[in-house]
Length: 328
Image (tube, rainbow, N blue to C red; front, side):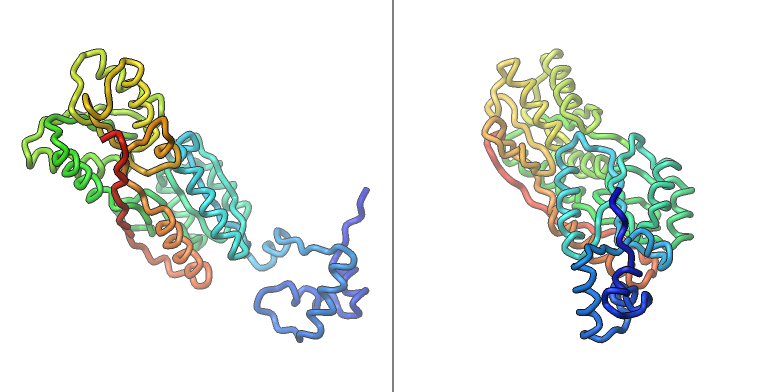
C-alpha cells in the first residue's frame, strides 16, 4: 500500500517547520520567496500534494462551486456545464456537479452541497424551497439562479431577456407572412417558459394573429409528440415556435415523417441555439442565448461574493440574437 506523503515529511526535507509548509499553501499567508521555493522544491521531490478538503475543514472555505442541474437531456445545459467548468478551472476552482431528478431542490441535494462546504452554488433548472433559501442565507453561501429568476428578488439571477426575445420572434414570423401560429411551451412552472409565451402571445394579440398553445416539457420527445398531435388534427399552422431548440428538433422530425415541407408549408423556430440546431439535417432558425456573457456575469458575481459576502440580489437579463437558417 502506498504511504501517504504529509506536510511533516516536506518540512523535514526542506528544513522548515510544519507551520511554514502550511503557510506556503495557504492563500494570502506571508512567507519569503526563498522559503516558498525551498518548500515547493521539497514537495515536488517527494510527491506531496496538499489535501484541499482537509484544509477546508480548518479554513471553512473550499475551492468548490456547486452546480445543480436537472435537464441533462437538454443539450443546452451540458453546454452550460462545459462553460462553467472551463471558467472556474482557470480561476483555480472545481465544479461539484449535483444532478437532481426533482423540479425543486430536495434535502439530499442540500446536504451534498453543505457537506462539501461549497464556496458558492449555481442552480440552473430547478426551483428553491423555503428551507433551501434559509440555509443558503444562514451559511452565507453565494448563490446564482442561472437561466431562471424568481419574483421575490431574494437571489441574484442571470438569464436571457426572454420577454423581449419572444416579442422579436413573433415580429419576425409576422414579417415572414405567417398568419396563424402555435407556441409549444416548456414546463409551466419556469420563468423562462412563462416569459417566452407572454412576449410571443402579446405581439400576436396586438396584430390579431390567431394563436394556439400546446404544453410540453422541454424534451425532444415532447416536441415530437406535440407535432404529431398537431398533424393528426390536420390543422398545420403557418409557423411553430417551440420554447427551446431540442423540442423544435423533435417538431422538425415529426413534420419530415409526415412529408410536411418546412418552411413552405410551415415555419419552425426554436430558442437557445444549441450546437445541434446548426446541423445540416436541421438548419433550425433559433434565438441564440448569450451563454458566454451569462456565464461571465455569473462568475464575476460569485467571485466578488466569495471574497466578501453581501447577499446582494438582482435580476440580470442579457440580450441574445436571432439566428436565421432554413426553417423559416
